[in-house]
Amino acid sequence: MPTYRYETASPTPRNGALVIDAPDRAAAIRSLVQRGEAPVRVEEVGETGGGAVFGRSAGSFAASGGMSRAQMAMFIRELATAVNAGLPLVQALRTIARQGRSPAQKAMLARLIDDVEHGKTLSDSMRAHGRPFDDLVISLVSAGEVAGRLGEVLTQAARLLDRDSKMRASFLAAMLYPAIIAGAVSIAVVIVVTVIVPRVLGAVAGQLTVLPWPTRVVQGVAAFVGSYWWLLILLAFGAAWFITSLLSKPGPRLAADRAILRLPVIGGALRDVSVARFTRTLGTLISAGLPVVASLRVTRDVLGNHALRAAIDDVCDQVAGGRTIAEPLEQSGWFPPLLVQIISLGEQTGRLDEMLDQAAAAFEDKTEQSIKIVTTIVPPALIIVLACLVGFVVLSILLPLIELQESIG
Image (cartoon, rainbow, N blue to C red; front, side, top):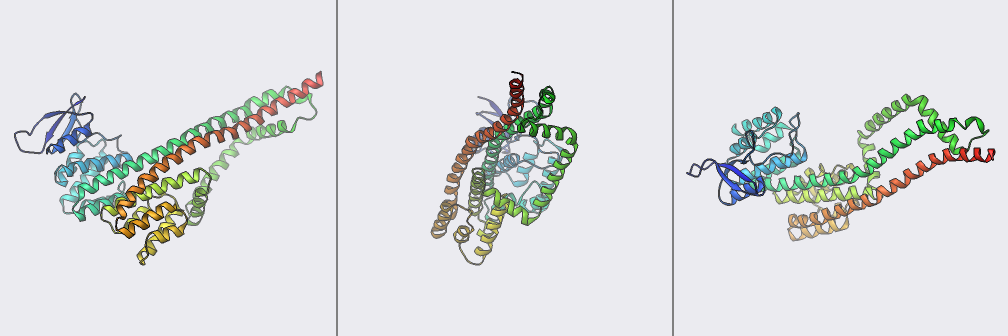
């Protein structure tokens, strides 16, 4: 088991370099906090350099000073640990700033520290800084400050960001395998059509009066690609620019997102991911003390899909007018009936945050099942389509060879 050297903020005789055995750095910090210590520095014995405070980040910060979702979760968790350990906010920020990996990150933390020292709240400082702090993080920090539960709310925020990062990574990993298969086979087909097929058919082209139609199709494609490859590249860039420009407009983007949600298999998986994220985020915000309408508006921005965002906008308007959440949510048609029933029950019993937390766990499990279905169905279906394409190319080569053999025989 690794040994960690730590220092505490306490001015008692125990202050100084001490050691503790723990499975990892996070476990060491938890053990120290449970013992009543206030650690300001924790580093593994034998590490070179300046060590680390409350653990190393899961990667360096971006050069722009931004953070990935996982890095933001780590930062919030470290801040929560420091605040829960009893450190003043400025001292907690200074402690975390010691592990900065880039000048941009250090500058960002220095600005937060300077703002807080001059009387600003942490949430106001984050809002003034902008990226990488989004509305979700800022709203949670603000709620924690208002309620006097900053450490507790920061812990909730870190858990939320952790779950969201894992869910995103799981879905992207599920899409990676089909994408690799499609890319590899597509490259193979292009090479066969543009290089191998012309060489094979060149020997028989003059010996047959009329080539079979599959051969003529493949020959035509090969000739077009060989002569106008530059035009295809321009068309690809032009199409990408046109689609990007079109989707930047609200109307077309809304229509496209609605169509995506209606796709078989993949559309259902995407909706499950969004519903799980919506449920977990809304429950966290409400339990942190934010008003329902404000929580809904913040949650809207984490959905990603504009069709679901439009539905939440309508829910916000109706809730602000005195209606419950469940009624307009059901009318939208995008959210599962189980979620509507759970929200309705939570509103009636006054335990909405608890019900949403329980529902989030169920929908996260359903999301994992949907992702497994995608990884089970999509790759074989993709392989079948690509196998048909490869079979057509092979057929275009074999048919003239068979006809040539029959004419010679």
